[in-house]
Length: 547
Image 1 (cartoon, rainbow, N blue to C red):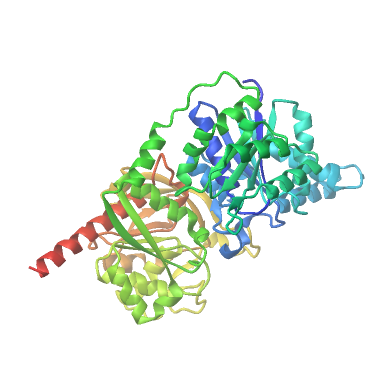
Image 2 (image 1 turned 135 degrees about the vertical axis):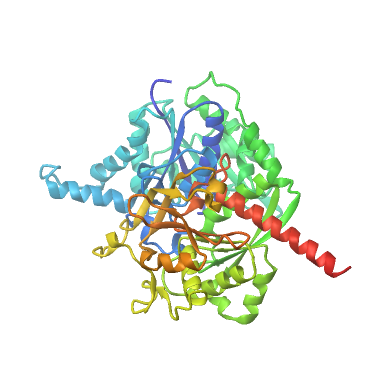
C-alpha cells in the first residue's frame, strides 16, 4: 500500500448505536491482518474539548499521552488496539471554528469572506488527513459523531463528501451504522428507518458503501436483500450487528459477518493476510470463564451514568480476565455514605475504590469510605481525588488534625494537606489548563507499588490541579503513611500506601487510561488479586466460626 486509505463511519436513526465500538472493532480486525490503523473521532459539539463538560453530559473525559482531553470513544480505540492516541485523534466543532477564526484574525484568508464552505470544510479535511499524512498508518478510520441529518453534523458530512471525491475511487469508503428495530406488536423487524437514514445521507451527496445494522434479532436473508436493494449497496455489504453480551465480542461478530473483508475489497486491497486473533480469543475465554467472583464498591459522585467511569469499569474487566475472576462493580453514591446504614454495607465488599472527581459534593462520604477500608483491612484503591481523600482521612483520624481538608473544598482549612499546585495558582481559564498527560514517577524501591510495577521508573497520565502538600509529608511518614511514588522533577507525591494494611494504595494519576486488553494495568490486576484474597479469607473465617 502506497497511500493512506480512509474509512468514514457515520450513524443514522438514533444516537448511541455504537459507532465507536464498530470503528474500534473494524480497526482491530484490520490490525490483526497486519495493517497499521488508527481511529479519530469528529465531535459536532461547539465545546473546544470535553474537559469542561459535566460527566453527566458526555461521560468521562479521556486523557491521552500528550495531554489532550478527549471523547471517551478514544478510550475504546486504545483498549482495542493497544496503540496510543493523541490530540489529532479527536476534533470538535469548537476546535475547528477556533482555528478558522484565529486564521482570519491573522489575515491568512487575505480579506476573503470566511464561510462554512470552503473555510470550515477545508479545516475539517485538513484535520481528517493530519494522521494519514504522517506516513505512520495504512488506514485511518474516522468516526463522525451524531446522526446524519443533524444540523451540527452537516459541515462534517460535506467535508467527507468533498474528500471522497478528492481521494478518488478505492481510497475512501463510508460505513453507515443504522438501527433495524423490532416492533413487538407487529412481531417483525422494520427496515424503513434504515432506508430513510440512507436516503438522508444520499441527499447530502454521500453513498453508503457498507451498511452495519444494529438489531436485537437475526436479520433474515430476505431482510438483507431488501436493505441491499433499497439502500443501493451490495448484498454482502449488509452487515448485521446483533446485540452482544460484551463489547469485546463485537470484533469476532464482525469477523463472522465479513466486515473487514468487504471494507478491504472496497478499498481495492485484495491481497490481505488471515487475521491473527489468538490473544483476543484467549482474553474473551478468560473473561467468560472465571473461577471466582469478587465484589468491588466504586465510590463516586456520578454513579447514575456508567460512562462517567467507563475506563475504570473496563480496566476491571481486563484485570478480572487476567486473574480469571468475575469482578462485580457496585456503584455507590458518595453522598449516600453520610448515612450510617449505607456505610455498614461497605463491610461486605471485597475491595473499595474511591473514584476521581471534582468539587466538594459528596466529599465526606468518600472520606468515610476510606476510613472504613483503612480500619477494617479491606483492600483500598484511591484514584486522583480518591488518593486525596485518603490523605485527608489519614490527617484527620490518625494525625488528629481536626478539619484537615483540601483547599479545593475548604479554602480556609487550618490544615491544607491537599493544596493547589504551584503551577496552577495564576491560572483562571478552564479547559486544557490542568496538569495533563503523561508525567514521570519514581517508585520507592521495596514498596508495594514497586513490587506491582516491577520497575522503578514509570509514566502515567494525569488530570488534576491539586496535590499532596509536602509540608505535611514528614508528619504523615512518621505515623506510617508512605509516599512511595514521587515525580522526579517537581517532587510531587504521586503514590501513597500503608505498609501495615493488606492492600492500601492511592495514586494521583489515572491508571485506568492505560489499561488495555493486551496489557491490563498492573495496579488493577493487583487490586483485584488483593480483593480475591480478602474474599477467600472471609470465607475461611466464616467456616471456622461455624465449626
